[in-house]
Image (tube, rainbow, N blue to C red; front, side, top):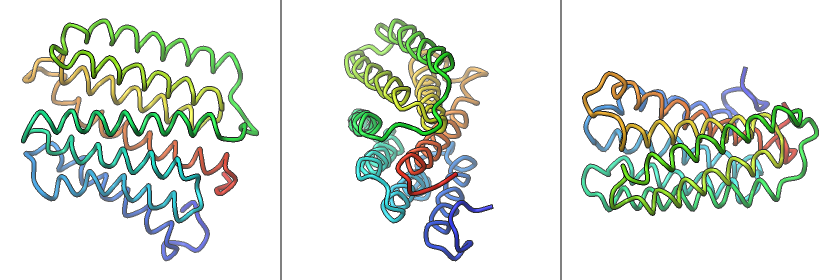
Length: 229
């Protein structure tokens, strides 16, 4: 069942379906070497979500955050060409998280927030994961330690900002985003390149990341009053 009225021919439904299809294509094709199709699928899948946010009447900070994340996806998709592209991608995602932080604090309160004990448990878990990863990556990240530390701090604040609203979809999206980045950082800096776990890291990162963007998108649209669940 599609979320917007009008069926598959509705622009918003069509945009969502196309974005999901591109995300699925990247899931099965994206583990190969860098190709134009790989870069396009990864970048456009999230850029289409940004377009959906704009066309559905979502807040501009949501659209901006998704655009910045799509730019980050582009640079990370071509990072094999130069380490500078990794830093560019990290910077784009950092800006995206800042946009999300501002968005979550600016949103009206959720009409059906998660119970306070649940929010507290999630907040403690987010903080613990960030502290553990920060400690592990401080030495493992080498020359990139300080950019990585700043990024860890930003995504933790993003997660905690999501808790301030309390909407289930937004909290789930923020938590999924943190899981994705935790696995990505572990793959890049902590796991052996040819290890058993390394071959599963890529798909896990992509599923949790794209899922996070979709959850946040619909969570924000629901709280904003555009999309009613």
